[in-house]
Length: 241
Image (cartoon, rainbow, N blue to C red; front, side, top):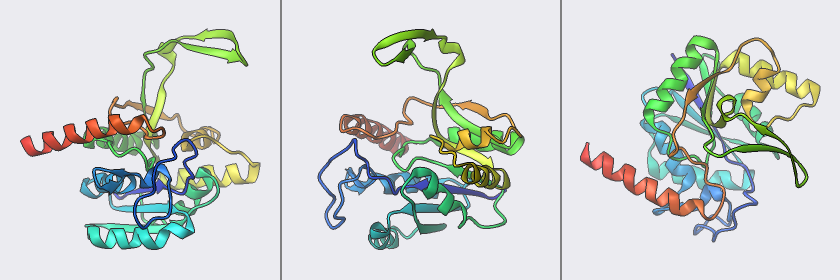
């Protein structure tokens, strides 16, 4: 079974304004340095280490492609990592990357470039579920009470047992995901994740596998402290194993 991973990394990161890594000319979150390496590189490394992944396609802004190419040359990746030009939206970036996925790919996993702590077992679980059902995502049950509001007024309290907070990867059969993007383009529909596009096809039920609290998305400056803690813990566990 061949599995391609798409990493959309063309975002502007407006919620994070850190100092730019040397030589990048950018202050976007995917390029923030975490223990000396850009967050994007930490994420790529996770999929390079996984025996489940066949290839990786990264969608970037045009001005970032050259220096990311140089970074990857130094990394000497053990499998194919292709860089493509992304779009102005996440959806366009993923669609651009999808067009570059090898034709004989079975499953495509779309993963946030700023989630560098996906663990191998969760990745295996969501891939195996998608292989069975055609579509699977990662999610965790919220621990806080969730309210539906209108402006500053509560309209309803939503039952937590029927809610999940979605994470990535989101994994789909290649042809199913291509069809979902084609329909979204025809309809002018913009979704917040790939699952929302697949759901509109009404062809498969999207399965959910449990995620972990460590699989965080780094979007705010405060997330960096937690990221450093998780990285140090994972490094310690690798040394002990």
